[in-house]
Length: 104
Image (cartoon, rainbow, N blue to C red; front, side):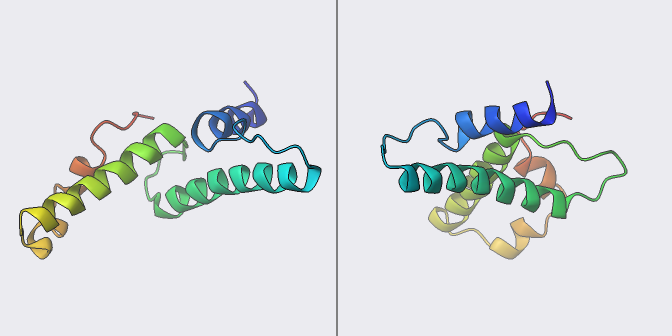
């Protein structure tokens, strides 16, 4: 698969590239651009946080899992009245947040 095929596959699977029902060209154009931009913003956010010596490999499935884990942890902190400083500064936080992501 070339790099472009991964972009379109991720856009179709995760950002709704093929879910638009509009018929007018400007609306279709807007939808396609929004879908690709969402994918590029996710890739940019992960690449800016990448600090490993390994080459950067992007997976939209892993990005969605990471964001879900962040939201779930935030919900637990709020609903259980936990100390956020204690949890968010714990050395094992990255391994908890990356639970279920794909290994590159």
